[in-house]
Image (cartoon, rainbow, N blue to C red; front, side):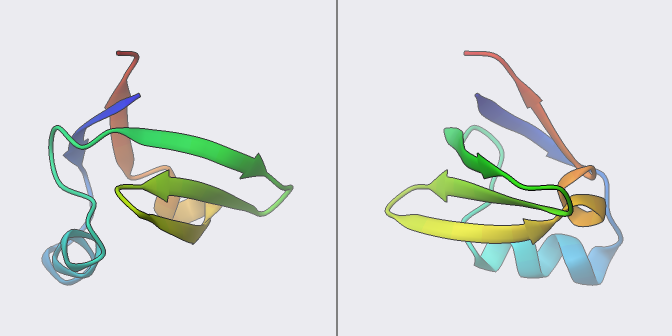
Length: 61
């Protein structure tokens, strides 16, 4: 998947950008637990709350 846009407020968008979540980046879902997701982004793994993850828009690449 490829990140297309983040639909969060300025502060959260800035923080996610600092973590490497930028438009065009490839994202892979490693684990989909009930309340959270573990993503592979660049050379890192990120655990995100489902509410935060829902603000990240992707397209299948």
